[in-house]
Length: 263
Length: 67
Ligand SMILES: Cc1ncc(C[n+]2csc(CCOP(=O)(O)OP(=O)(O)O)c2C)c(N)n1
Ligand code: SF4
Ligand code: SF4
Ligand code: SF4
Image 1 (cartoon, helix red, strand yellow):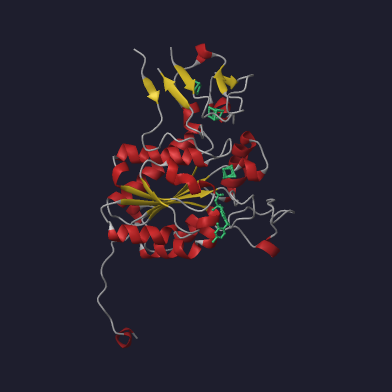
Image 2 (cartoon, chains in turn blue, red):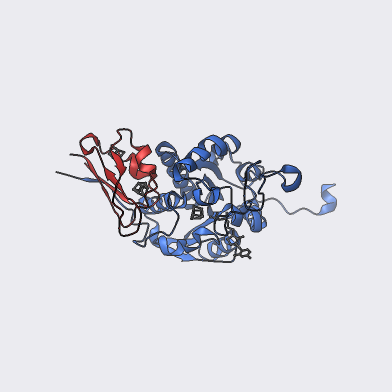
């Protein structure tokens, strides 16, 4: 008897995704959908769609969704989670959204150890607005605002978000993965599942950074796009887990101290 | 016989499944679909093992695998 061994997850709706051919967003959506379905949390999950190409994510995910202002995902997620701690809350964000306009929200939500999950899609460019430089654009990489390649003397250096957040005490799970090859897709799914489980177990803040292809604004074909992730992005943004719950110290409520007593 | 089914409404002809398949089962259709894209098709159906690697990388969740 013939069996279906791979089918569309119920974590996604049937609506056609409007991403460009070969765009990594679609794979990440599917993984989040599959994880929600496998953990049985779709009906108590609230997702937050960013401003960016995935602004329509509210139509694609089969859970409740909300769409706040650019970069404010972690702040809105904080509010929802604190009012509805029984819900699973995730914020889906691009690199312009998360690491540029929304960097303050990201760092403070992480430092507070909010019990939320962030799905961070790093495609090293502003996709939706036509390929301007992002905080994650690689050195030498051409974009519409760095037409001669990113020059660190003018435009500074790319930000490594996982490494940056790993310096904070509170985050419980931080990992960087990619979705350019089947084996990487499987690892990405594992990391996303772990991140959601950390939230379900009330263990703290979790974030998964996914290196993703944007062939359109890199001005390459989809196949050259996966090559770029492999040859250019991964060497600069090393894959792996940057923080896990095993390495995390127990949080204890400190005794109130007067300033004078501490000096 | 293991096989894949490509949803020609979802497929955008990116060819990521073509390079993901270890047995070169998939090629691109010479005829474009109603979407205007050339969709993926099985060119060596007898070689398919139902491993699902093609479906794992498909950004448009256009592939279903049967075994
Ligand atoms: C307050 C505000 N500033 C600027 C914009 C314009 N804008 C829309 S999307 C975007 C960047 C999107 O890039 P990214 O977050 O990397 O997502 P991608 O499109 O690459 O997935 C910007 C700057 C906006 N919509 N709102
Ligand atoms: S512009 Fe880039 S990120 Fe946006 S949909 Fe197209 S490929 Fe994806
Ligand atoms: S299921 Fe495996 S063998 Fe069959 S087409 Fe897909 S990748 Fe190739
Ligand atoms: S990966 Fe998906 S969208 Fe791309 S050609 Fe194959 S079936 Fe079509």
